[in-house]
Image 1 (cartoon, one colour):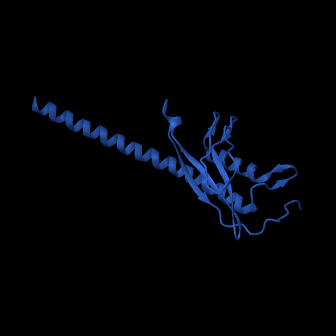
Image 2 (tube, rainbow, N blue to C red):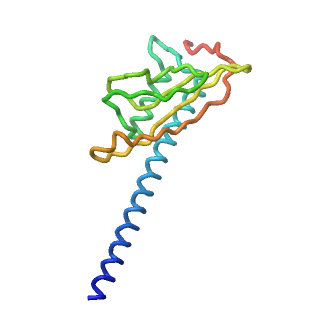
Length: 155
């Protein structure tokens, strides 16, 4: 009888260890994807030198970002979502109560004495039934200061 109780304890420890390791693996994969999304958005904003760059009537920055996020396989959101408040920043993408099929990220613009810069928030998502929609952790990053805002892309 003692061996059965001892084996049960070891099996329970093994299950707990496997659960913790699985959670760490899932968390690191989700963080890696959110970090990659944030970096792609920042790279695209810095590449064009701003957020509202229009060529032939369409915003090329948002179009390129959405194409990149589609390639990565980032999370599309159908329900309402709100972006966290950033002190001193103007929210450019991710208006409160957005209720269309969009990618879940937020873009802010900040002004400083050198020019302006952008802040980006992407989110870690976990596709777990019932509780997955409540587990969203933000990953934040900023662009470098952008000095020249008078670039003309309509060549």
